[in-house]
Image 1 (cartoon, rainbow, N blue to C red):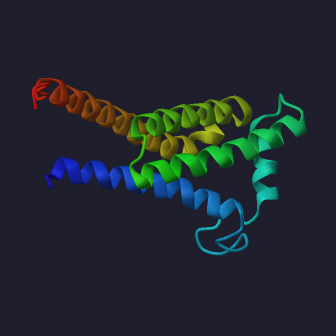
Image 2 (image 1 turned 45 degrees about the vertical axis):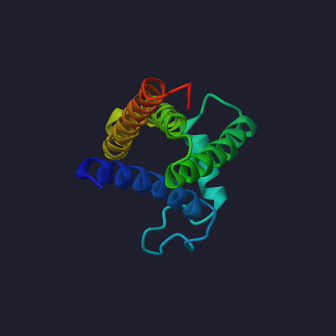
Length: 153
């Protein structure tokens, strides 16, 4: 295994585990608020924050968004950790994080969101790199298949 391949796998698995960790936190699996590493502690706290980031939506729509985002994060996390559909998972991750970033800026303001933005931009960059690498690997794989295919075999 090369350093490049190892780095790719490490970024992919780490990013997937981040998604799964955040979902575990908001579902209360990591314990109540106040425990080390626990931000949400339960799903109601997360839905309150989702409503804060989406003040232009009625609460029902905001709650639906909270459930949808949680489902999407589980799917993205599982795909990244397992290495399945990497290009699609990375693209979904990047889109989700950009929407999150814009929601934070427009709802609570740039100054207040700055601490979160740094983390979000780093993870979004990792998603973009993951997408680029997955896209390149697929292209190389397809080119290899076409160039090395012998229909007479």
